[in-house]
Image (cartoon, rainbow, N blue to C red):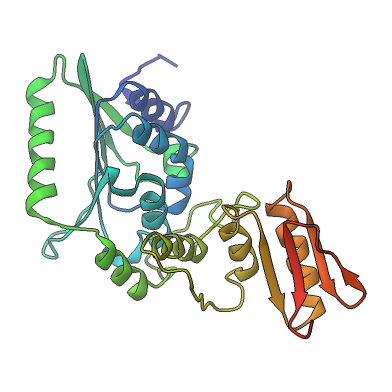
Length: 288
């Protein structure tokens, strides 16, 4: 097969490789995609952190139609980038929104990757997705047209995804029905011991309340969300933890969970015959 760095088909090469290379030399990044998935943001996590470290301005315009964009993806971007990203929803209900393009400006040029890839792991790595690399050098008129259109959509046909908009979207979001949404091949496969789904949203809000000076919080979540793992993830920045429950079974399960997340911490019990006090994380019964 003929080698071509402009045509990216997902057959023998994938878009993520080109995005990663572009981020490393970019001085400005603009992204327009119809939806964001947690798997895609997780894939880009280190690249997003790199842009924050280098203070690269990033703008992202995405869609909220049919609930395809996952709130956890939005919260994860905010967790990683904070106010270093200008994140917006396309907001013209009279027209469909299916644009997918990644725009990078460098010291000595610029590229747009335009095609079919949204921000999801499969779209960026192993899916059959067609994208074309358009360079400003030699295609300046086309480049400027796409760039001008992005500017118009971003500033005149969007709403800012601030804290209020993000909370509103998360509260009304429901997992898309099968007939409206085809899940990613590996959507149910999650890397071990990493926050996922609603856990990301809860961790984001717990951290935000602490930054606001609030030292107490309550998380209410359904069975299966992973509240014990959420507690373990939330504890990472703290040296000493007290975990209290009313049943020994719960404490034993919590001990195993925290052991997975806090591998370098010393864990102990304060119940029944156990009276461990020289430890970082203590599991105690209410009765004790």
